[in-house]
Amino acid sequence: MLEMRPIGFVRSPYSETAQVPKGWGAKHDAEGVLETLAEFEQGLTDIEGFSHLFVIWMFHQAEGFSLLGTPPTDDRPHGVFATRSPRRPNPIGLTVVELIRREGPRLYVRGVDMLDGTPILDIKPYLSSVPVEKVKRGWLDEAEARKRK
Figure: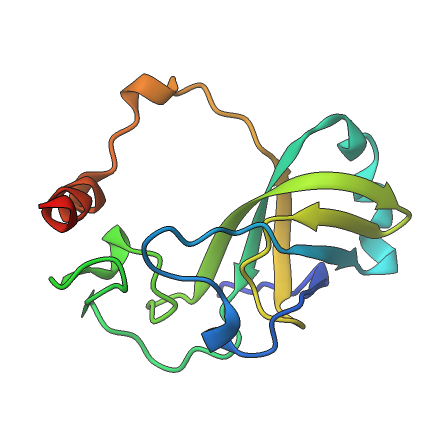
């Protein structure tokens, strides 16, 4: 049996999903706090040396899932695994945030796109060995090209 429990919770300016920027040109520059539970604070040792972090979290307000959906950035349906939809078989989210500072069990970050109170499952330092010029954006590049026409 798979069992996960939160290591902490997000403090965010967003209380409703409609407040989170989505669609063309959405900027994720809101600041928030990743509050880890006291029992996990030691796990933050040396995290201050990283500029960015992966945050793995739960879409705790999502209900059910759809294997196809039309995202706000396109008028065509795409598979759930090719989107960032919250309506997933396992409602897990992934966000890259910029670490501003640490104060004990609290990580002050920029780039939150989660709701206030979102359960955090894990935090990892952002490391990427894929050169930017090799990154492909699939259907999103095609949708942006159609929009420019």
